[in-house]
Image 1: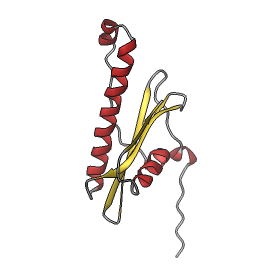
Image 2: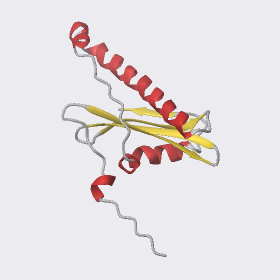
Image 3: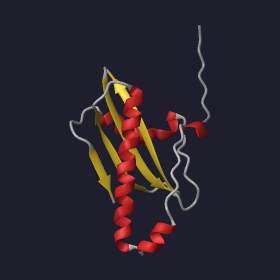
Length: 130
């Protein structure tokens, strides 16, 4: 028996957010009952400005994904606070961020998946901003 699996290249390519927006891709990963998560923040041009990777205190994939979303939420709040230190406070309140959570083809989250896999070997959460 021969099985042929076909995927279009565009199904495996990262989709940028709309112009002027940012996108945080996250992945939960479980192997041998050890869970980890990873994520990467990019702008509409694909430039990375933050990422994280680490193990999770769970064994369920769904919980690992939820923990990744929780970590993203904390990181985004920190980034907004950092930005607001230098911005006009009143103007910042007028442009509150829109947040959308979507489930996409995991093939499009290659970098986030790689970070999650590396997270399996970490004892602590690795976070980086720039």
